[in-house]
Image (cartoon, rainbow, N blue to C red):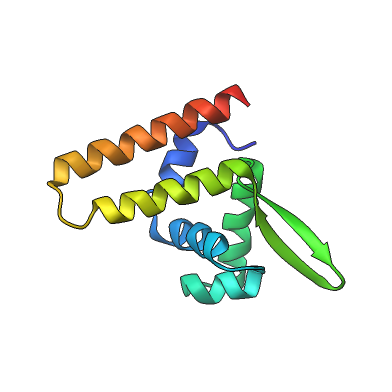
Length: 116
């Protein structure tokens, strides 16, 4: 597992990991190349992000035939739903309230990761 929960918080304060996780949540059977296109990033960068997500228990890989799909774990789905909620919060609320809500969501997820 990566160093600590602060690394997880840092990962999801970046655009590409968020885009990849949300695409994995939205797509029926996401695979690395489709996530790469959704996030407009390189294959290597996408696989590095997915490896970190796997280490945190947010995703797992499922092989069907010759295709390797990305599957969100229950924790990964919860994080993706929270991120979608944050996205809707960013439409029209004061900035400090938005940031407080985001940090609270991340803190709750950190606690859940620690307890798993």
